[in-house]
Length: 419
Ligand SMILES: *[C@@H]1O[C@H](CO)[C@@H](O)[C@H](O)[C@H]1NC(C)=O
Ligand SMILES: *[C@@H]1O[C@H](CO)[C@@H](O)[C@H](O)[C@H]1NC(C)=O
Ligand SMILES: *[C@@H]1O[C@H](CO)[C@@H](O)[C@H](O)[C@H]1NC(C)=O
Ligand SMILES: *[C@@H]1O[C@H](CO)[C@@H](O)[C@H](O)[C@H]1NC(C)=O
Ligand SMILES: *[C@@H]1O[C@H](CO)[C@@H](O)[C@H](O)[C@H]1NC(C)=O
Image 1 (cartoon, helix red, strand yellow):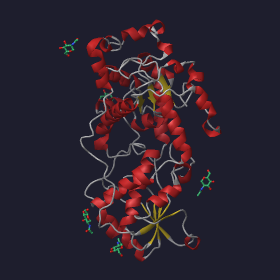
Image 2: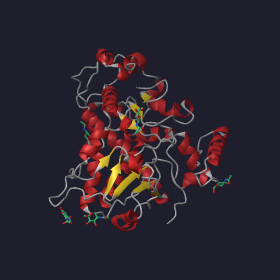
Image 3: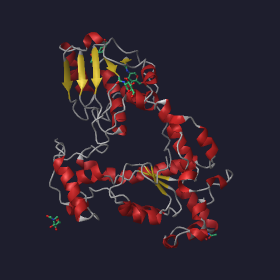
Image 4: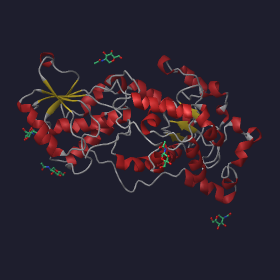
C-alpha cells in the first residue's frame, strides 16, 4: 500500500485516518481541558514575586506584567464551581460581543448552572485502564549485543518521541546496542536541539538498563566501519525486525535507521515488547530538568486563571500549504500556500482543489470553526484558551472571530504570549 499523500508531521499517517485524526484533534483538546480542569480544583495563585525569584533561564515576564492583569486578587480558596472571571473581564468591562455568546452567562446561573459547569470540566472516565508497564516475571536482561543501532528520528517533537519508543523496542528485538538517537534538525521547525538538550539522557540510559544497552556515542573504533542505512518499513511487526533486519548483522556491525516514525506496528506485538515501549515512553523518556522547570512554570501560570483549554490549533502555514486548504483565505494567501507546496520537493501532491479537499473532511478546522464548536459545547466566553501551536497562519486576521468569542486567548509565541 503506497502512501499517496502524507501529512506533515506530526500528522504523517495514512490518508484513511486523516478524518479520524481531525476529529480526534478536538476530542483530545477536550480531554486535556477536562483533565486540566480537574487538576485545577484548587486554583493555584502564582504570586509574581515568586516568578521573579526564579533563576535566570526561567526568568520570564509575568502574566501580570504582560496583560496588566491583577490575578493575585483571585482567592486561592475560590471553588472551581464558581466562574472565574479574570479581573479585566469583570462584568462592567466585558466587551459588548460577549453578551451575544449564547451559552456564556445564563446557563451557568441558577441551581442547574453549576451542574453544567461541572459537566464541562469533568474528568473523562479512565474506563478502568491502569498503567501496565512492568515486565513479567520471565523477562530477562538484554541478550548479548550483536551490533549497534543508530537512529535518526524525524518529525516534530511528539513524533520523534514516539519514534524513540519504537526504536528502543526494535533494539531489544534485534539484540542491538542502541546509540542515543539523533533528533531531527531539518524538519519544518528547524530546531537544533540535540537529545540531551530536550531529554534527561542519563536517566534514559539508566532506566532502560534491564531492557536494552544504551550508549551515548558509537565507539570510536567503529566510526569508520561500514554502516548499513535502512528505511525500516512502516507499521512492521516483530517478524520483520527479527528476520529481515536482524539478518543484516551477518554483514554489518552498525545499522542506521534513517527514519523512526511509525516503524513498529501498534498491535500484535508480544506483551513484553509492548510494555517495553510504554516504559520507554513514560518512564525512560523524561524532559531535561531545564525543560521540566519551564513546563511547570507555564502550567502553574496557566492554572492561575482556573480551568483552561489547551487548543492545538493546527492552522499553521505548513499544514495549510501541504493540505491545500484555503477555505476563508484571500487569493494572495492561497497563492502563497500554493507556491510553498510547489517548492517543497517531498510533498508529492501539488495540484489540490481546496473545495474538494474540504468537502472530503481533509482540512483542519479554521479558528472560527473551533470557536463555534467550543461555544456549542457550552464553554463560556471567559474560558482561558492557550494556543498549543506555532504561529497561526495570517495571525490576527484569522483569529479575530475566535478571539471575540474567547477574549482570554493566549499563545506561546508573539506579543500575546503567556511565556
Ligand atoms: C434543572 O434541570 C432539569 C432538567 O434539565 C429540570 O427538570 C429541573 O427543574 C431544573 N432545576 C432547576 C432548579 O432549575
Ligand atoms: C513471558 O510471560 C508473558 C506474560 O507475562 C508471556 O506473554 C510471554 O509469552 C512469556 N514469554 C516467554 C518467553 O515465556
Ligand atoms: C537475541 O539473542 C537471543 C539470545 O542469544 C537469541 O535467542 C535471539 O534469537 C536473538 N535475536 C535476534 C533477532 O538475533
Ligand atoms: C548537544 O548540544 C550541547 C549544547 O547545545 C552540546 O554541548 C553538546 O556537545 C551536544 N552534543 C552532541 C552529541 O552533539
Ligand atoms: C474544484 O472543485 C469544485 C467542486 O468539485 C468545482 O466546482 C470547482 O470548479 C473546482 N475548482 C477548480 C479550480 O478546478
